[in-house]
Length: 350
Image (cartoon, rainbow, N blue to C red; front, side):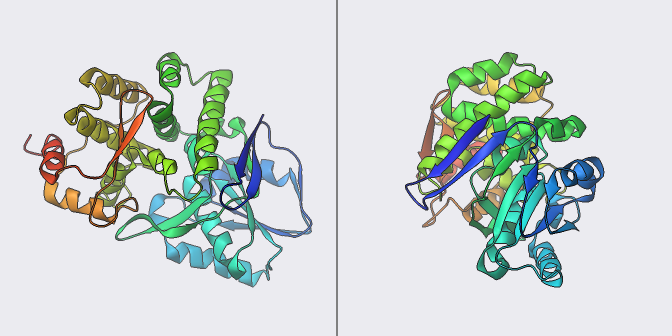
C-alpha cells in the first residue's frame, strides 16, 4: 500500500510512504541507522537483515523525550564525522517520533544536508511523526522550538513492529489518530469509536486512513503556513503540559490527549463544540487508556507558556479548535479572561 507525498506547490519534492512489510533495501553509499537501545533490542537484527550497503553503522542514543536536545544532536554528528560520512551518505531513523525528529534534524545539518529515510516503530510515529518532514529538538523554553522542515526520501511503515510496543506507547499513538478524525473526518471518528485496534487488519486500515489524511494536509501546506497548523490540535495545550512536567511524566501522545480535552473545553465555551461532542471524545480517549485529567497549579504561568508556541505571533495565541465533529476553526483573538476561565476548570482549586 503506497501513499504519495507530492509537494509540488512548494519544494517540488515527491516521495512514497509504504505501509507493508519492510522490503529489502540496497544502498550504494555509507549508511547510519539512528536508534535507541529499546528498539535495537527488539528489531535491529530484522532491519540489518534487510539492508545491503558498503558501510553500515549503528548509532544508538538514549531512549526518552528528555534526551531530545542539541547535546544528543551533536553526539550523532560527531559519530558521523568519526566515520567520515559525506554528502552522499544516508541516515535511517529507526524508532519512534523522538528518533525520527532528531535523525531528520541531524540530516538537515550534516554538511548542509544529506538524505534520510524514516522507518517508524511506534504507532504515533507511523500515523503522524514520520510523515511530512517536521524535525527538531526541545529546549528549556519549549518543545520542538529548534528544528527544520526537512523531508525524508521515503517512509517505510511496517505494522509488524508494533507487536512489541508497550500498551502505553500504543495508546499514545491513538491520540494522534483521533486528532485527525476530529479535525477532518466525522465518519472516521465514528469508525474509531467501535474499531478494535488490536485486530491487525483494522489497525492497518486506521494507519492507512491517518497517513492519507496527513499526506493530504502536507501536500497542500508543507511548511505550516495554513491548513497544516490544524494538525497541532491538542498540541498547544499539550506542549505546556509536557514542559511543566519536564517531559518525564507523560508520553507525547498522552500530553496531546490532555491537550485535546482542554482544547475541547475551550471550544465548548465558545459554542463551537457541544458538551456532548466533547464528552464523546473524552470517553473515547479514556477507553483507549489515555489520560484526560491534569491539574494546573498556576493558571497565569500556564497561559504565559502559550506565547512560546510556534503557532503564536504578534502576541496573539493561535488556538486550533474543533468546529463541530470533523471540522475545525483557527482562532487567534480569544479574550484572555475566557481562556483563563477555561483553564481554571483544570486548576487545583476547582
